[in-house]
Image (cartoon, rainbow, N blue to C red; front, side, top):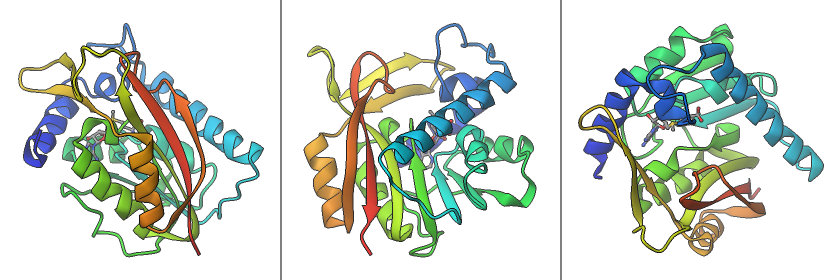
Length: 234
Ligand SMILES: C[S@@+](CC[C@H](N)C(=O)[O-])C[C@H]1O[C@@H](n2cnc3c(N)ncnc32)[C@H](O)[C@@H]1O
Protein backbone atom coordinates (compact mmCIF):
# COMPACT_ATOMS: atom_id res chain seq x y z
CA UNK A 1 0.00 0.00 0.00
CA UNK A 2 1.52 3.36 -0.97
CA UNK A 3 1.58 6.25 1.51
CA UNK A 4 -1.59 8.00 0.33
CA UNK A 5 -3.53 4.78 0.52
CA UNK A 6 -2.10 4.13 3.98
CA UNK A 7 -3.40 7.53 5.13
CA UNK A 8 -6.85 6.97 3.63
CA UNK A 9 -6.99 3.49 5.09
CA UNK A 10 -6.27 4.60 8.68
CA UNK A 11 -8.60 7.59 8.42
CA UNK A 12 -11.27 5.15 7.25
CA UNK A 13 -10.53 2.68 10.07
CA UNK A 14 -10.51 5.55 12.57
CA UNK A 15 -14.03 6.58 11.58
CA UNK A 16 -15.60 3.12 11.46
CA UNK A 17 -14.44 0.80 14.27
CA UNK A 18 -11.39 2.60 15.69
CA UNK A 19 -10.85 0.75 18.96
CA UNK A 20 -11.01 -2.61 17.25
CA UNK A 21 -8.67 -1.38 14.47
CA UNK A 22 -6.20 -0.44 17.23
CA UNK A 23 -6.59 -3.61 19.31
CA UNK A 24 -8.21 -6.36 17.25
CA UNK A 25 -9.07 -8.62 20.19
CA UNK A 26 -11.57 -11.40 19.66
CA UNK A 27 -15.09 -10.35 20.55
CA UNK A 28 -14.32 -6.63 20.36
CA UNK A 29 -15.21 -5.97 16.72
CA UNK A 30 -18.22 -3.72 16.03
CA UNK A 31 -17.79 -1.20 18.84
CA UNK A 32 -17.57 -3.83 21.60
CA UNK A 33 -14.55 -2.35 23.41
CA UNK A 34 -15.35 -0.74 26.73
CA UNK A 35 -13.40 2.54 26.73
CA UNK A 36 -12.15 2.21 30.34
CA UNK A 37 -11.01 -1.34 29.71
CA UNK A 38 -9.31 -0.19 26.51
CA UNK A 39 -7.33 2.54 28.32
CA UNK A 40 -6.54 0.15 31.22
CA UNK A 41 -4.91 -2.19 28.70
CA UNK A 42 -2.55 0.68 27.84
CA UNK A 43 -1.61 1.16 31.49
CA UNK A 44 -0.89 -2.56 31.82
CA UNK A 45 1.29 -2.46 28.74
CA UNK A 46 3.31 0.57 29.87
CA UNK A 47 3.79 -1.04 33.31
CA UNK A 48 5.10 -4.13 31.55
CA UNK A 49 7.64 -2.06 29.60
CA UNK A 50 8.65 -0.12 32.73
CA UNK A 51 9.27 -3.39 34.58
CA UNK A 52 11.22 -4.89 31.65
CA UNK A 53 13.54 -1.86 31.54
CA UNK A 54 13.88 -1.79 35.33
CA UNK A 55 14.86 -5.48 35.48
CA UNK A 56 17.58 -4.84 32.92
CA UNK A 57 18.79 -1.72 34.78
CA UNK A 58 18.01 0.48 31.78
CA UNK A 59 17.59 4.03 33.05
CA UNK A 60 15.53 6.49 31.03
CA UNK A 61 15.46 10.26 31.73
CA UNK A 62 11.92 11.27 32.74
CA UNK A 63 11.59 14.49 30.73
CA UNK A 64 9.71 13.79 27.49
CA UNK A 65 8.38 10.83 25.54
CA UNK A 66 7.03 10.37 22.02
CA UNK A 67 4.35 7.78 21.23
CA UNK A 68 4.47 7.16 17.48
CA UNK A 69 1.17 5.98 15.96
CA UNK A 70 -0.69 6.96 19.13
CA UNK A 71 -4.22 6.17 17.92
CA UNK A 72 -6.66 7.11 20.71
CA UNK A 73 -3.78 7.79 23.13
CA UNK A 74 -4.09 4.39 24.84
CA UNK A 75 -0.33 4.23 25.54
CA UNK A 76 0.29 8.01 25.38
CA UNK A 77 -1.81 8.71 28.45
CA UNK A 78 -0.29 5.79 30.36
CA UNK A 79 3.19 7.22 29.67
CA UNK A 80 2.33 10.27 31.81
CA UNK A 81 3.02 8.13 34.91
CA UNK A 82 6.66 8.10 33.88
CA UNK A 83 7.32 11.31 31.91
CA UNK A 84 6.74 14.99 32.58
CA UNK A 85 5.60 15.65 29.01
CA UNK A 86 4.26 13.18 26.43
CA UNK A 87 3.57 13.70 22.74
CA UNK A 88 1.43 11.37 20.67
CA UNK A 89 1.73 11.55 16.89
CA UNK A 90 -0.54 9.92 14.34
CA UNK A 91 -1.14 10.05 10.58
CA UNK A 92 -4.94 9.72 10.85
CA UNK A 93 -6.64 12.99 11.73
CA UNK A 94 -9.68 11.25 13.22
CA UNK A 95 -7.40 9.35 15.64
CA UNK A 96 -5.71 12.56 16.76
CA UNK A 97 -9.06 14.31 17.28
CA UNK A 98 -10.36 11.39 19.34
CA UNK A 99 -7.14 11.24 21.37
CA UNK A 100 -7.48 14.95 22.22
CA UNK A 101 -11.11 14.41 23.21
CA UNK A 102 -10.20 11.61 25.63
CA UNK A 103 -7.08 13.28 27.08
CA UNK A 104 -7.16 13.28 30.91
CA UNK A 105 -3.81 14.98 31.51
CA UNK A 106 -4.26 18.51 30.20
CA UNK A 107 -1.16 20.16 28.77
CA UNK A 108 1.18 17.39 29.87
CA UNK A 109 0.00 15.55 26.77
CA UNK A 110 -0.01 16.91 23.21
CA UNK A 111 -1.27 15.19 20.08
CA UNK A 112 0.18 15.96 16.66
CA UNK A 113 -1.38 15.11 13.29
CA UNK A 114 1.49 14.22 10.96
CA UNK A 115 0.38 12.71 7.61
CA UNK A 116 3.89 12.44 6.11
CA UNK A 117 6.48 9.66 5.99
CA UNK A 118 8.95 11.44 8.30
CA UNK A 119 9.11 13.21 11.66
CA UNK A 120 10.45 16.55 10.38
CA UNK A 121 7.80 18.20 12.59
CA UNK A 122 10.08 17.38 15.58
CA UNK A 123 13.58 18.83 15.99
CA UNK A 124 16.54 16.50 16.44
CA UNK A 125 17.37 15.39 19.99
CA UNK A 126 14.00 16.39 21.45
CA UNK A 127 12.83 13.25 23.35
CA UNK A 128 14.19 11.03 26.13
CA UNK A 129 12.06 8.07 25.09
CA UNK A 130 10.37 6.98 21.86
CA UNK A 131 7.77 4.21 21.90
CA UNK A 132 5.99 2.55 19.02
CA UNK A 133 4.04 -0.68 19.11
CA UNK A 134 1.42 -2.09 16.71
CA UNK A 135 2.23 0.64 14.18
CA UNK A 136 5.22 -0.10 11.93
CA UNK A 137 3.71 -3.52 11.26
CA UNK A 138 1.01 -1.85 9.17
CA UNK A 139 3.30 -0.20 6.61
CA UNK A 140 5.76 -1.18 3.89
CA UNK A 141 9.37 -1.91 4.83
CA UNK A 142 10.69 1.27 3.15
CA UNK A 143 8.39 3.41 5.33
CA UNK A 144 9.35 1.38 8.40
CA UNK A 145 13.02 2.02 7.71
CA UNK A 146 12.53 5.76 7.21
CA UNK A 147 10.74 6.09 10.55
CA UNK A 148 13.31 3.94 12.37
CA UNK A 149 16.01 6.43 11.32
CA UNK A 150 13.79 9.30 12.37
CA UNK A 151 13.23 7.78 15.85
CA UNK A 152 16.98 7.81 16.47
CA UNK A 153 17.28 11.35 15.13
CA UNK A 154 14.61 12.79 17.45
CA UNK A 155 16.04 11.01 20.51
CA UNK A 156 18.46 12.88 22.74
CA UNK A 157 21.89 11.28 23.10
CA UNK A 158 21.42 8.68 25.85
CA UNK A 159 17.69 8.45 25.05
CA UNK A 160 15.94 5.10 24.59
CA UNK A 161 13.80 3.69 21.76
CA UNK A 162 11.31 0.86 22.36
CA UNK A 163 9.97 -0.42 19.05
CA UNK A 164 8.04 -3.50 17.89
CA UNK A 165 8.16 -4.88 14.36
CA UNK A 166 7.06 -8.23 12.95
CA UNK A 167 9.72 -10.48 11.42
CA UNK A 168 8.37 -13.18 9.10
CA UNK A 169 5.05 -15.01 8.72
CA UNK A 170 4.74 -18.14 10.83
CA UNK A 171 3.21 -20.10 7.95
CA UNK A 172 4.84 -20.41 4.51
CA UNK A 173 1.55 -19.78 2.68
CA UNK A 174 1.62 -16.14 3.67
CA UNK A 175 3.52 -13.68 1.53
CA UNK A 176 5.41 -10.70 2.94
CA UNK A 177 2.07 -8.90 3.20
CA UNK A 178 -0.83 -10.38 5.05
CA UNK A 179 -4.28 -8.87 4.75
CA UNK A 180 -5.57 -9.84 8.14
CA UNK A 181 -9.06 -8.58 7.67
CA UNK A 182 -11.22 -6.63 5.30
CA UNK A 183 -13.41 -4.19 7.15
CA UNK A 184 -15.48 -1.16 6.33
CA UNK A 185 -15.42 -1.22 2.56
CA UNK A 186 -12.03 -0.09 1.35
CA UNK A 187 -10.28 -0.27 4.69
CA UNK A 188 -8.13 -3.24 5.58
CA UNK A 189 -5.42 -4.15 8.03
CA UNK A 190 -2.13 -5.15 6.44
CA UNK A 191 0.85 -6.66 8.22
CA UNK A 192 4.42 -6.20 6.98
CA UNK A 193 7.58 -7.60 8.53
CA UNK A 194 11.30 -7.07 8.45
CA UNK A 195 14.13 -9.40 9.41
CA UNK A 196 15.80 -8.96 12.78
CA UNK A 197 19.18 -8.66 11.03
CA UNK A 198 17.97 -5.83 8.82
CA UNK A 199 16.40 -3.92 11.73
CA UNK A 200 19.51 -4.28 13.89
CA UNK A 201 21.82 -3.18 11.04
CA UNK A 202 19.69 -0.08 10.56
CA UNK A 203 19.90 0.83 14.27
CA UNK A 204 23.67 0.59 14.15
CA UNK A 205 23.95 2.73 11.00
CA UNK A 206 21.62 5.37 12.49
CA UNK A 207 23.62 5.84 15.70
CA UNK A 208 21.82 3.34 17.92
CA UNK A 209 23.17 0.64 20.23
CA UNK A 210 20.93 -2.38 20.73
CA UNK A 211 20.29 -2.93 24.45
CA UNK A 212 18.13 -6.00 23.99
CA UNK A 213 15.76 -7.67 21.53
CA UNK A 214 13.03 -10.12 22.44
CA UNK A 215 10.44 -12.17 20.57
CA UNK A 216 6.78 -11.44 21.29
CA UNK A 217 3.33 -12.42 20.04
CA UNK A 218 2.02 -8.90 19.53
CA UNK A 219 1.46 -9.18 15.75
CA UNK A 220 -0.95 -12.12 16.15
CA UNK A 221 -0.58 -15.83 15.48
CA UNK A 222 0.28 -15.53 11.78
CA UNK A 223 3.44 -13.47 12.27
CA UNK A 224 6.62 -13.66 14.26
CA UNK A 225 7.31 -10.37 16.03
CA UNK A 226 10.18 -8.75 17.93
CA UNK A 227 10.58 -5.75 20.13
CA UNK A 228 13.86 -3.90 20.37
CA UNK A 229 15.22 -1.58 22.99
CA UNK A 230 17.87 0.76 21.58
CA UNK A 231 20.09 3.41 23.14
CA UNK A 232 20.79 6.60 21.19
CA UNK A 233 24.56 6.76 21.28
CA UNK A 234 25.87 9.84 23.14
C1 LIG B 1 -3.03 -0.51 15.52
S1 LIG B 1 -3.05 1.20 15.89
C2 LIG B 1 -2.03 1.26 17.35
C3 LIG B 1 -2.24 2.50 18.18
C4 LIG B 1 -1.40 2.60 19.45
N1 LIG B 1 0.01 2.42 19.18
C5 LIG B 1 -1.87 1.62 20.49
O1 LIG B 1 -1.21 0.58 20.65
O2 LIG B 1 -2.90 1.87 21.12
C6 LIG B 1 -1.99 1.88 14.63
C7 LIG B 1 -1.98 3.40 14.64
O3 LIG B 1 -0.89 3.84 13.81
C8 LIG B 1 -1.33 4.94 13.06
N2 LIG B 1 -0.47 5.07 11.89
C9 LIG B 1 -0.43 4.30 10.78
N3 LIG B 1 0.51 4.76 9.93
C10 LIG B 1 1.09 5.81 10.54
C11 LIG B 1 2.13 6.71 10.16
N4 LIG B 1 2.75 6.59 8.98
N5 LIG B 1 2.48 7.71 11.01
C12 LIG B 1 1.85 7.83 12.21
N6 LIG B 1 0.83 7.02 12.61
C13 LIG B 1 0.47 6.02 11.78
C14 LIG B 1 -2.78 4.63 12.75
O4 LIG B 1 -3.52 5.77 12.36
C15 LIG B 1 -3.23 4.04 14.08
O5 LIG B 1 -3.69 5.04 14.95
